[in-house]
Length: 442
Image 1 (cartoon, rainbow, N blue to C red):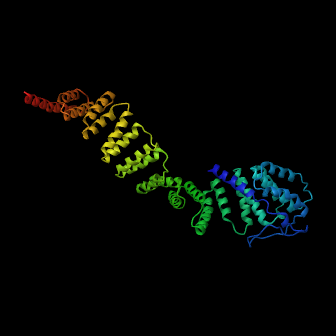
Image 2: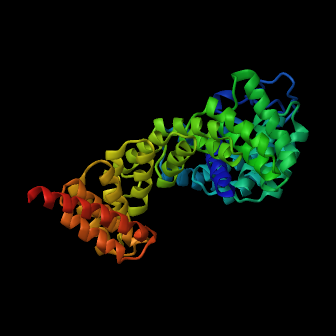
Image 3: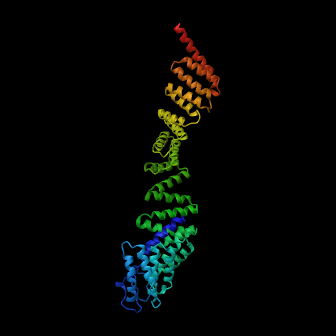
């Protein structure tokens, strides 16, 4: 959060620096006597003070500097030349207002060049003449200094300048509330930060119907620090209405999951899936698992399969096992068999081949059952070896290959596993078939 805030203030400092030239020669008073500054007063409540005027002679000194600010695409060399020109002036006999503008222009150039240390130094020099500039310019400079302190992550300094600014203005602006709230957040004064951000958000919602996305994010972060999950959820729900995005929807469904509000979580996740916001296997896996837990294995399998097809979900043994199970629960048996075969081909043992043989037998795929059972035995690691031989024997019986079936059942009898106890029954049954065929042939 600190890095993000610092970057934000670099941007705002740079933007503010582009407007350091409010005085042009045509606006200069044509007298050297004390008069009012030409700075515009767009707030009727804004007080003014009598300050020295800029002489035409000094105004002409600033003219080349102002031309740089008026360029469409000034280069670094242009700014450096303007600085060199400014720093060549002897300002000892200048009045306080002229000296203030001398430092202000330098500060603006330095800030534009992202030399924030020198920009801050020049603004501080400018404030040495604060009684010779209009209150509005004084206030703007204090606000700029607070931003420059924030660039250096000097939150005490930033708060100091903005508190000083706060004492001078007739009515605090929303920018002021936001800046102070941000500085308080960085100082871990979360309740103070929340008070300021509430003012900003309420003002925006009243005037525009919604606050800025960044303001909601700050409010969310503050509630997180204060350990207020219900308020965090409220803000998250507001954000998906006003600023629907991958980030806001993912955050919302995660919060629903934390509260075990599964239907709401699924609804939010469905939006993420439909909008293509899922880009990690864990997201699709959780989505599919939730549908299965809500007694909808078909959707679980469907979305998981689509994740595999899209290359988001890895094609590995475990994932194909999940897919086979969900397709089976959804009574999509052929799809289950296809998935189980892929799991078996990626397995190091025969267990998946055993499960595949059972599924194939249920679908009357007898030759496939025999082949899968053979691979299961060859792969080893079976929990019930006897059962695999029985599956193979049953497939042989369905094909009326009774001698091979009997041999399979006898192997079952001599194998390990709980199914071993069924072997004698199958042997007796298939022997009866063999005897019956023999008697018919004779």
